[in-house]
Length: 79
Image 1 (tube, rainbow, N blue to C red):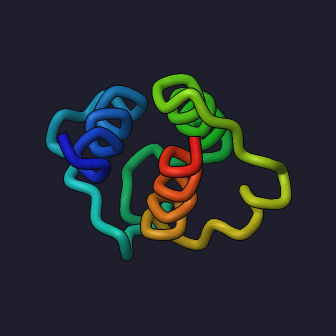
Image 2 (image 1 turned 120 degrees about the horizontal axis):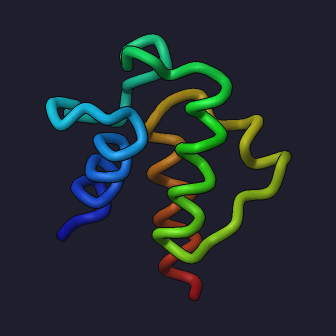
């Protein structure tokens, strides 16, 4: 499965919504229930599922799902 598909599954799991269809331009405003607590749950779940870690500085640079995807992609291809 491609990276976007795997990330979409994580979003569906974290937000308990099987109808979520993420896209690179999406932001927290586009997903019901995406608040600070669910954001922490999302990041922790992504780190666990992909066996990666984000730095605090990195997390502050994410403006949309595309930024998150690019960061994940760079981390899993350098492992």
